[in-house]
Length: 303
Image 1 (cartoon, helix red, strand yellow):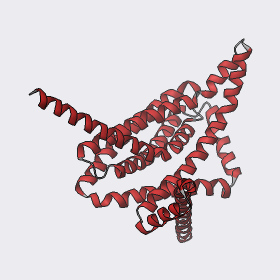
Image 2: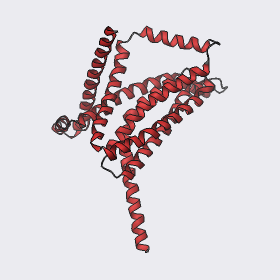
Image 3: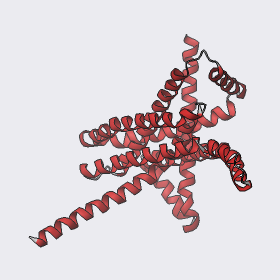
Image 4: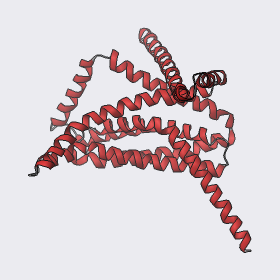
């Protein structure tokens, strides 16, 4: 009986070890979405009154948990009932990542900057207008952030599912739930910290200590740069991760990238697949943006 108990404990430990490894792999695969997730959600809650920033982040985090409570069972059902759909859905998620990255670049370099400035000015005027219902404005921000989170969460769950497609249902469930919880706590914990950096900097800059004031000024200067860095890293990761997902779903292209990596030697071969996946992601994203732009233009002409 004792030996049977030891065997059972060993089996449980092996299962937990497998789950831990798969969770780590899934987290690495979804890391590309993390930077953009942080930047987007931090941007969504900016402009809220300082004393309402953390409650807004908490409200969005609860909405994110609801999103994942819907997405995780849906993903498991697809994996159990129609596993053949996992790869196409994964490729759709990867293509969408590429599209988001290309759209951000197109918006940055082709969009009229004056329109963005006018939008920001209108938002500031709304905050200063006593007749504006700030609670309603806050609710709109929360709804928008939760909608954005649903898309990003769907990408995270789809990518995670692809890493555990061949695992048992119990392992898939454990990994997806684990990734969902870790991502939610991690993302919104960091978002809460990011949106409060400027407040912390302002508080320190008013201290009597010269060192505290210097640190405060540093934090105030760092906050916008951190947001910009997150946005850049998130965009790059979209192309790298999204392109990698798309190329992996096209065997001839995936094998060609692997062959190119082995042909250039061990050192260059370590970064070649990443670079080629990034190029593929840019191409895929640019094509989708062009198609969407053309379709929207044709619809505009009809109406």
